Image 1 (cartoon, rainbow, N blue to C red):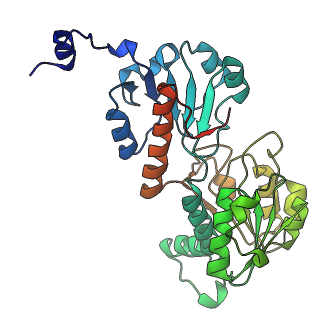
Image 2: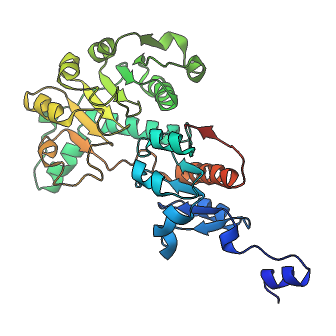
Image 3: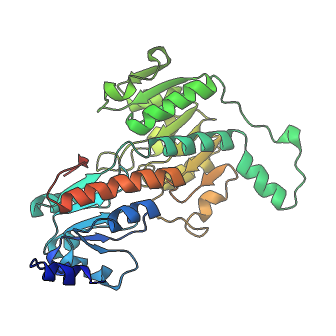
Amino acid sequence: MASQSTAAAVNGTPSPSSSDLPAIFVLDPYHADAIATLKAAKDIDLVLPGDARRSRYHDEATVLVIRSESRISRDDIQKCRKLQAIVKQGVGTDNIDHEAAREAGVKVFNTPGLNSESVAELSIAMALALARRLPEVDRRLRGGEAIVRSQTLGVSLYGKTLGLVGMGAIASVLARKWIGAMDGHVIGYDPYFSEALWSSVPAGRFRRVAELDDVLAAADVVSIHTPLTSSTRNMISAPQLGKMKQDAILLNAARGGIVNEDDLLDTLKAGRLFGVGLDAMVVEPPTAQTCEALLDFPRVLITPHIGASTKDNQSRSGVAAVEIALGAARGQELGNRVV
């Protein structure tokens, strides 16, 4: 059987070489369904993470497809000769230099909303696990300790108040789950609140407040769902931690750097907070060494930014990201543009 290029030549139409096609460089691991979608496209030059050409993206890439692992700096963008777009799976794009992309005319896209169910599930799981002291009891049991039930009391989340820092798509899904599962109430703070995102949340069960401190003082569980920006970095520091209830639970499944980890450690040393769940930290991925001080506290639960890491979600959001990339390579603007 003649090759595609040979057949085209016989028909009088030269087949484009890979160098003539727009090049999509996938820099980070993606779900197999997303990769299959890219491989099915015959009008692109595809470079995958394990390809020897990956390091040549500065010279060859038309579109970059990334996740949180890769950081695209000003220097990277300035070195790129052909780059037209960067597509980031998920909502956070703080690993891309927006200003440099804007100056270079490079479009930046993300996939907001698609991770919402998965991140909300992890937040609920963390809250329940901490409230019932599951990580602590499990570690103690594995260490050979005899657990005395009367001395290992947790707290109930039924009817309790969830405080949301950030009221975007993830927060709205979490609010619905909290109200349904806990029969509780929700209080939230977000200066960029969108009523459309909250139309399906029972109006009588949540309220939005104008000040962050109002959320911190009222909530039994505080859950952070805001992007990392210059205004949100260290947003939860010593003064804010001091406003929280003595036995509150703090969750961060957003971005490392929003919670000041040094101040959080001091708060725990002072005997405040019932539990802390961190899926996002300043140093990622976290290790036993980088988290050693925090892990000394039995009711601290740390996970390596796995909020979106379900098979279902990685397929769905991965395919969405590569479809945006294919559109960008074809001169189309699909999906949500950030820059």
